[in-house]
Image (cartoon, rainbow, N blue to C red; front, side, top):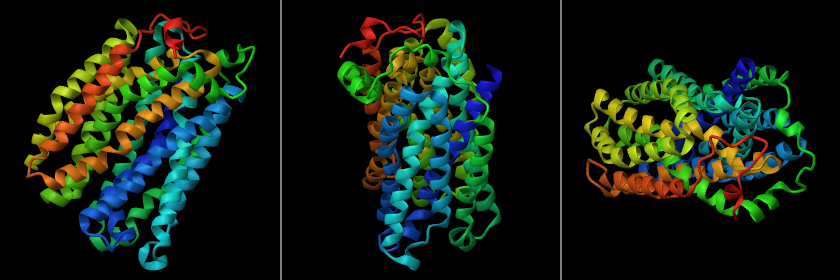
Length: 425
């Protein structure tokens, strides 16, 4: 289990590194390079638009790779998704800017971001299921939390590279070639990830399935559509909070408040490190008290903390901004630490890869893809303290709280079963 969990963690860290490094670049540099004819705010919005395309692609990746995972096994998904995400990320590092190929530059960026999201849409389901379906019942939450630590490591790695480059290069050097280095590094990481995953065993739960769904997505839509919609709505707040902290706030503070990008990256990274360290503890609480109570508590905490978070951000003081980010991310991980066990437990084994991944990534469209765009627009129309952003995030949290309230508890469900209540349409 330790070797399997470590391989899943490393793989998700690598793939989320690819995804996050784009978000950081979008906040810092892609607007002027790929949308130079736009105003600064409009350029940032356009860059966040290409960022959002990755989230739109993720549910499509869930359908594609979920089909592979439910028909041919969880293990092939890990290899194929890693290859696609890694190759498209490296290609972004070589993409010529607007001053070289004109309008074709943002189009190329859009296509590569779509492919990146397509690969990541398959990664989460494969990595989580391979871990949770091997895990002993009493510790499914703990073992499945390892892949959930991966995004934190990927984020710290991506932003750590950006931070070093930002601190050591001039603005001109960073804009000319420095921002490309993290994308090129994704190739090395992808090779390492493929090596780590080459010897993993297939999931025992998959091998026990007698009759596989012919088209898993059709079965999910027919038999589990209410469940998919509820899980997507429930997870929206997690994505909204995370990308408000890690992507929107970075652009807002550097452009509107005049905070240096080095300071902002440091504040955000410090909060993410604490969040990642807290993940296994939250997962253990989920094994002891259930998945649903943790999710409800995290949602409630997020709803209560969004206005304080934007107020602390508006101060521009590093310590206060860090505290604001930390409170938000601890609320986020209280939910998402148990999600890797919760979602697979909700679905029957023959459509588990597709169902869990589609619900997870649809939540990303609702929360992650829209939040940087909506928050940027709301902040532009507000004063120094972006209260509109706080109201938007609080509204998302209350909406997700209602969705979680309608979902069942699953801690006692065996991985070879599905409760009748969870299969309702």
